[in-house]
Image 1: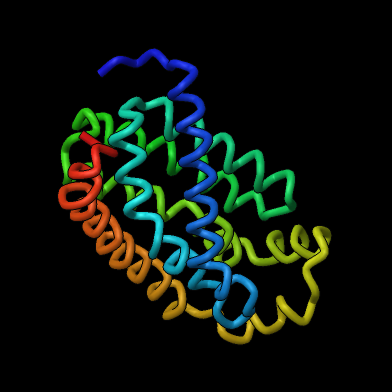
Image 2: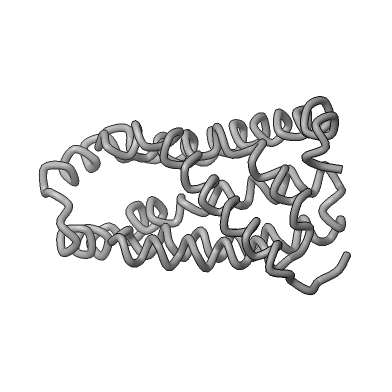
Length: 196
């Protein structure tokens, strides 16, 4: 496993980071815009990205790739006003995921699935802050322009059961999406010569 980055690696890393953003937006966006469902954003965000993530690991099998993705996600989230919990959640989870997948040289299927689950936990950061440091979360989001009505509706449904569903649901969906990614890698991507 060559740890040196080429210009091509950086371009591919940028492309796949963008694709992961798109998958999260498409899969989780409908939850994020609805205050009573926003806690399930991580579940939706993990739904579509599994195949993209697995192909990403195959195309750039280097620890630095996911770390760069985490830095980009954190930076973009910060610039667009997302809560710091989500931004740093993505950063930390991308770093951990890179070492987990890297431990198997990005070829161990079990470790790659675990890496994707860890990556998918990233956006939960903001919701953990909401549950455990609610006043801080509310102040930050009000300052960033979130309406009080939206926050009030979140508060009306927030409870231990919601957090459990968010965590367990994300792990289950991420596992299934990752397995689908591995299946596609085997049946389609390899046949097409996209991944070796």
